[in-house]
Image (cartoon, rainbow, N blue to C red; front, side):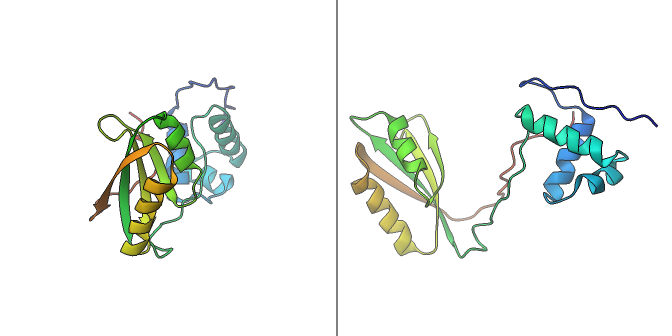
Length: 164
């Protein structure tokens, strides 16, 4: 059985079935070694490692570690939406993105052009964060807080990545 080495991939490269299978293996266990993935897929560890490097270099995937916010004592999720005046929404978004307590920041359409997702240990922390955002960031005209009551699915992967 001859194994084919991956060709150099361009930035907009498409992934083949083997790439998708490698990503699926890494999704199940991000610490899996190339040799173990290779055994599972019938490839050598070198081929798997080369494909992972090629996908990473092409920007097609990246391996990251994610912490589950619940395990770290955060019991509440809330979306804080901001109405902005006299300042570009992107400037406010960049300022929010620099904060450690913000999970994600988004530019949106509608009345509230900036939205950010936060995790809180308790309601008091949530109220203080909303006050801090409204008083501590220039250009914030109004703050709307939406408590997320139930999370039915939390999947931080980019997808869908299954082969077609």
